[in-house]
Length: 199
Image 1 (cartoon, rainbow, N blue to C red):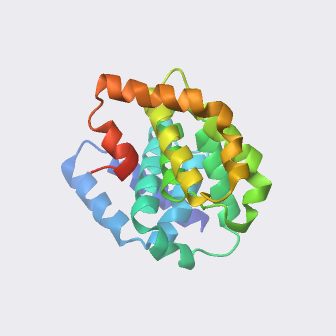
Image 2 (cartoon, rainbow, N blue to C red):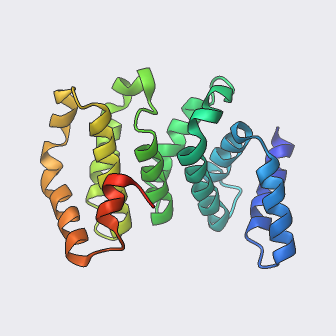
């Protein structure tokens, strides 16, 4: 498995190549890897310290796309005991210094807000902290916007659980401010994306 992971890191590097032929070959090889295997490798690449920042960022973006588009297909195929790694990955990315990693974590969470399953009660305070901290990210509006979408998705799947809604009452001013900024700036259909997802 470790050898396969090293090969996968090389594949990710080739996906970043400026040479079209190298990149095209890498894209074909990447697409040939089963989705469940890609998830495990992408999580390891994103959280691993042996990859450069550029490769970790690419891995996070690819993982976000994979989860957003194929979650229901690959989830049943994941090997047992790999889900805790994913949760660690999600929290690690959400608190990373890279805004791309933070935004990716929030997009993943918004795509699958029930990701914690029956373990959610254990992580509720961490979820709240991750989302509230991201809502108040003064340095990056994309992170704030992704956080707003994530909070909305989380609250929607818990629409009948008032205790969860009450957790975010103090964040309503921040949420309103983010929405106001989007309306004021007319950011690339951001309001439609908030409610309908990316077009």
